[in-house]
Amino acid sequence: MPEPTPLPRSFFDRDPLVVAPALLGTVIRHSQAGQVVEVRLTEVEAYLGEGEDPASHSHRGKRPRNATMWGPPGHLYVYFTYGMHYCANLVCRPEGISGGVLLRAGEVITGLDVARSRRPASKRDIDVAQGPARLASALGFGREDDGRDVCGGGSLLVLPGSGAGKVMSGPRVGVAAGAQSPWRYWIEGDPTVSAYRPAVPRRRR
Image 1 (cartoon, rainbow, N blue to C red):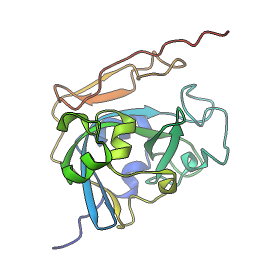
Image 2 (image 1 turned 90 degrees about the vertical axis):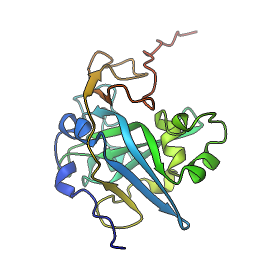
Image 3 (image 1 turned 120 degrees about the horizontal axis):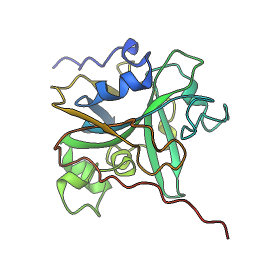
Image 4 (image 1 turned 180 degrees about the horizontal axis):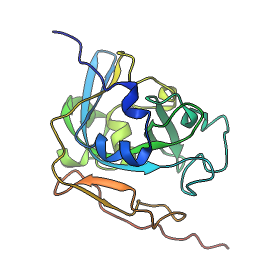
């Protein structure tokens, strides 16, 4: 069987606001220790770059932990959040200009048993990759995957999908700064899309 052909780097070498809705319906394929999991993307969020988007990890400039966001495009940016979970983004824009798309939710279409073993708390199949931390966990992502190339034909690929249906947009989830920007995109009516929850401002003690 021929190896699947990933999306070209030129697909990611564009504005995140263009890449994000175009990613809906595409498939993330990760092969790890001989086990393959594929997730069809149903929800994503776009993040712009340094000085442009107060909700972006790159807003205040480059640091060792966020350097992947400056490219090259077509690489995975993985970060640790709340001291518990990993989340994954696909880096966009020409090298040297930061930006990316957060992978928020999807449907596991291959390797459901493997994905469920990584997400034992999930009660339903549609919950396994519903939310950015769950999706990253279902695919087996960790900090060691930060900076991996998704266009090079290796064990991590983004593959063309079969279409997304009607694409909706609205406010991003869980961000206080830049919350009004309608840069979350999802497939209308898909049961794996996560519930919208606005950010709750933190009170100073």
